Structure formats: C-alpha cells, structure tokens
Image (cartoon, rainbow, N blue to C red; front, side, top):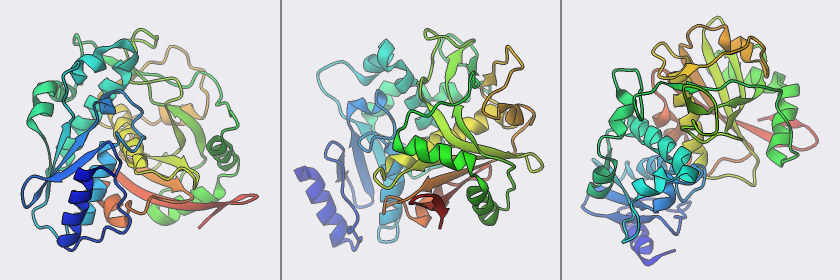
Length: 338
C-alpha cells in the first residue's frame, strides 16, 4: 500500500470507520482534502482499460467507500480525479483507435454516475479534460455523439459459444438448468421470467456494426445471462462470477449493463437496435417483441461477493427504473442457489 493510502486509512480509523475489509488498490490515491471531502485519484488508464479491473472501477470504489464512511462522517462528499503527468492527456489517449471504445464507454459511465449520485463531483483537472463531453449523452434524449450521428446496438448473430472458461461453464450450465435462478428471481423481486438466455451483446456503433464504426468496446462484451417478464415488461440481467473472481469491479460492470439496457429498450431509448434480418439467436426474439422495457432488474450472481459490497451499497445503486439485487450460488457437482 502506498504511503498516501496508509495515511488515509489511519484517518478513517481515527474517525471510527471500520476498515477491516478495506484493502485499497495500490494505483488509486485516496486522501482527505477537507473534513468531509475525500478525493480519489485514478490512474490515467481508467479511460482505456477494462472497467471490471479494480484499479479503474471508479463506480465500485466510490460507492463502497461512501457507504463505509457515511455513518461516521456527516455530509461526506467524494471528488473524482485522474492522475496528471507530462505525457499525453487522457483525452488524447482515449482518442487513439485501440482505446476509443473504452474511452467512449468511460464518458457514458461517468455521465450516468454523476447524474445519479449528488455526493460525487469531478476535480478541476478531470472537469477541464472532459469539458462538454459528458453532456453529449444527454442531448435532448437523442444521445447523438461524435459528428451528431445516431448510435446503434447490435443483436446476436449466432448462438453463444462456450470457451471452457470456468465462469462460462457455470453460465452455460445455469442457462440449461435455469429453474433455481428463475425461482430465486421471483422470490426476490416477484418477477416471472420464462427462461434464461446467454451472452446478450452490448456493442454500440455508428449507424451500423463494423470494426471501424465501433463506439463502445465489442468482441466479448456481453451480459452473461438474461431473461424477460413479458407481462411486467421487466428485463432481468445477471453478472456471474465464480468465487475466485470477487472484485469491486463487478459493480462497474453491472451498473453499466443495467443503464445501457434501459437506454436501449426503455421508454426513451437513447440508442436503436439494427435489425436487418428477422433471424434471431439466444432468445433475442423475446426481447425484440417487447416494445418498451419498463424496468431492469440487475443481479450479482456470485459464489462470493466482495465484502465491501454490502446491502447498503446494492440498495444505493438502485433507482426507480433500475433495481439491483444479489443471488448467491454454490458450485459443486451442480449449481445450487443459497
């Protein structure tokens, strides 16, 4: 742990905050800049790296730390910043082709996050670099971005593969034996889904899907499992992790997916789905036939959840249109729901 973070944790302890489960990433700087203000300074790669990595998962660290400290520190505020240095700005970094998808997705994520959580703000360097880019995702509900072109999403073009990754093996098993997750979903939310499907794409493109028109990251980017309640027009999505992969970054993943689904299929869609053919895969016809999704139910489907992701954090993430919950499972010879 770097020296600045050691000082920060000691100050939290002096204020009566329980830091038992607080292990801070080495490359994020945490510091008090006033009695009630914490500044988190993330590495520049936050705009060009997979959002589930703990060192760049700003949503996860801000929400977990806020919930950890708010009971002991009144009027707690968190200021987000990105490390500055003499090299290229993170805007220049993000505009490079290989980083563009992560950068655009970072802007989208930040725009959603800042709007929902009033205790979060941006430091001067981050504000100066971003300038008006965040507002481009709130352009009268039309979400025009970069050259004012409309953004479109992709749909599944073939059945989902299974590459024998441990999480994908569990995901495939659950999709083929969905009753336990379906029943637990109904128990928690009173939502009735008919089936579970795998790998719902989350790519965003300019006008059409090509490598050159990609706006967000693509390739393997997809929601692990999903299902829909036709009657309630509720979309349920699940981010699955095995016990060896319990990171704060799962918050950033699921938060992004849930907001994107509402912006794709909600009553005021920000993006559109290109449908050049009527051939559907992975159950997508069930989602395509629902004209408007009224609510998204987003689940952490995990063997083990990071100890900082408490019920308070999950409740804070929820809003009127998007609700977050957790489902714990055990993986032995078969998957069982706890």
